[in-house]
Structure formats: C-alpha cells, structure tokens
Image (cartoon, rainbow, N blue to C red; front, side):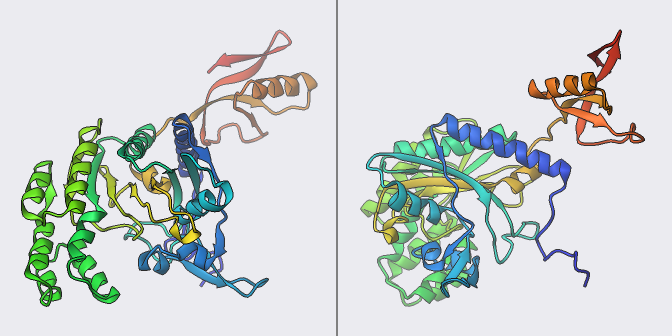
Amino acid sequence: MSAWVLPDYIADVLPSEARHIEEIRRDLLDMARCYGYELVMPPLLEHLESLLSGTGEALDLQTFKLVDQLSGRMMGLRADSTPQVARIDAHLLNRTGVTRLCYCGPVLHTRPSGPHATREPLQFGAEIYGHAGLEADLEILTLALDSLKVAQVDAIKVDMADARIVQAVLQQSPMNTAHLTQVHAALAAKDSSELRVLTKAAPKSVSQALQDLVQLYGDAQVLDEAQRVLPDVPAIREALTHLKWLASHIEGASVSFDLADLRGYAYYSGARFSMYAPGASDALARGGRYDEVGSVFGRKRPAVGFSLDIKSVVGVAAARPLRAAIRAPWGEASELRSAVAGLRKQGETVVCVLPGHESEVDEFHCDRELIQVAGQWVVKAI
C-alpha cells in the first residue's frame, strides 16, 4: 500500500470545500457570540476517565485510546466535546450563575456514523449551564436553528423526543445493562417483535408501553396520543408538557416527534432534538438537556446544548460565491508594492500574478485589476 493513502473515512479537505467550511465556521462562531456565548478550546486528548465518565457505552466505543508516554495513564482522543466543556464549567470557571459556552474543533471517531460520514468531524457546539427552566432549552433550540440558517441550509425539520419518557417506562421493570442496551436498540430500530421477546418477563404494562412508544412518531397529535396510552406518571406528564411548549415556540422549521428516539449519547436527561434537511443522510444537528453531565466532575448543574459537524453541513448547504479579488501584476517597483500593500491593508484580496501564469484559475473571483495609468497604480473593473 502506498504511504500516501489515507485511512478509511479520513480525507484531505481541498481548497473549494475548505473555503466553504471556514466561511461557515466563522459564521457559526459569530452567531454564537451574538447570543452571548463565550468561546472555549478544550484539548484534543486528555485522560480517558475524564472523557468517558458517565457518558455511556456509545461514546466509549467511538473513542480512540492510547497510553501517555509521560505518565503511563490511558488517554483518549475526544469523540465528543460536551464532557470536556462540562469539566471546564465545573472546575476551571466554577461560576455560580448562568454560563454560556461555545466551541469548534475536530473530534475523532473509531467508526464512521454512516456510510458517507467522516471519522474526523469538525464539531461546533454551544451549551448553557446553570438554568433549569425551559427558557434555556428554547434558546439552544433557536440557536441551533439559526446556526443552520446562517450556514444557508434550507427546509429544516426538527424532530423532538424526551429521554425521561423511555426512562420512566423502563424504571417500572429494572434490567441489567446488557438487557437494557438491547431494549434501547430495538426501540431505535422500531422492532416490535424484538421488543416482545426482550420484555417477555416484564410487567404487561411495561411491555405494552414500549410497544406503544414504537408507534408514537409523527406530528403534534403524537403528544395527545402519548398522553392517552402511556403510563400516567409525573415524569412522562412533565416531558409531554415540555415538548408541547417547546414545539409551540419553534419558528422557521417543521416539527415532528419520535418519542422512542434514543440516538446520540447516553447523557441526555430531558427534552432532546435532531435537525434534518433535504440531502442529508443523517441528522445535521443534535442537542437537548443533560443535567447529569457535570456530576462526575463533582458539580451537578443544569445543562442544555447542541452540536453539529460542519463538514456534514457543507454537504447540504447552498454553494457560496467565490470571494471577490483584485488581480495585480508581479513587480519589484516600490510604487506597485506599496499599492498592493495598501489594498490588502484595506481588507482587499490581491492576487499577484506570477510571470508565465496569467491564465490560471484559482479559488478567487478576480473582478478587478490593478493597472498603471499615467504613472499611477489604480484599480479598474475587469
């Protein structure tokens, strides 16, 4: 095998796509700043127990692991930034009030999430710590929508669920971890037959509720049907009320519900959402409430957030025009070099054409040129 062949699902990003990714990255960070979010930059790797404590098996399986040659301890390359941001909130900032944080950086996955996915997503996300009310959930939902819109993604669909619903049903029939994992997989696959087998020993009310959950997906009528058929317990009543309230405040996107949805990582503890768009093979953004995520760091705080992979977003976002630029001749004359420097100082992109390369195409749209007129260097439209 050639030394320059990259691993499966790892790829170089070439100029056109890289330009698109970078423009969206800047727009997303600007959008988060408009909402009052502060940027943090967690490290790419850290001690494994810090990355994985309380996050569930899915994140463990997605994490590359290695031995630190300095300490001999196991380390991990992050597969998700949320546990790191929770650690920053708990231990480094340690604020008493509301904290809004955002981040943007690469994560690494041991396996791709889908047939066309990369194992090196560029993850952007935003999180609120310190507010337990639905106002924080709605702010994150709105920011996630605005983030996709500023990236020029159209026809967004928001699919909603709540982790408390499945948890409340399963609490009535305790199961070991392996059995619980199988039940979760059957729910995600909407496999009613497998659920019947897995819940054969469970109380009939639990088995029936799980069968009902598989069918509870669709428009807002799903919430009324869930209220009618699911167990009448406080956690489920509260979850359905919260979903109704959040959905009623969503603007600029269609809304649906899938009450058996358990995709994503195990730290979710309340209302959660996934956002889709035409042309995307999977959700473009996922988020929700995860109040338990800081517990392993000794500071349990209300928390809600979302994340997305900019590389996936680029695949469905509208194409962007090339950046306008000025074409200039190459030369040693001080007047020419001074004119070029002055234009760049003003924020213009000036591409100096090297001798013999006058007709080459690049990633800029040269709609003007720097020419000499009556001994002065001036910019003229092409």
